[in-house]
Image (cartoon, rainbow, N blue to C red; front, side, top):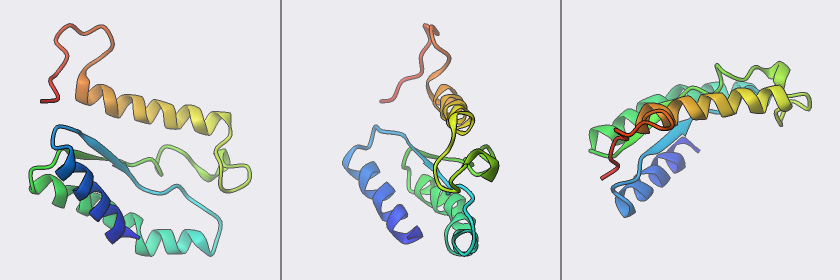
Length: 111
């Protein structure tokens, strides 16, 4: 799965070189899925993002797992309202870090 994500990011960045891709890790799950996520995917996401950035692609990493705990996934898969709020805040912070705050006349360029 991690190789597919990296290929997808590479393809997106190659086809749309002005785009900035934010890549996140996977949220916590119940076992046996959590062990798989923690051994075969999440430990590699940040390094794969760094690899794509070293190729000149506009890409950054967002650690979503640290922002949304399992308690915010009542069915152990989908976030509740609090979980979605935490996800929204994390995405918002990542996007604002790239483009500047709302109403900022000095908005950073994407070109």
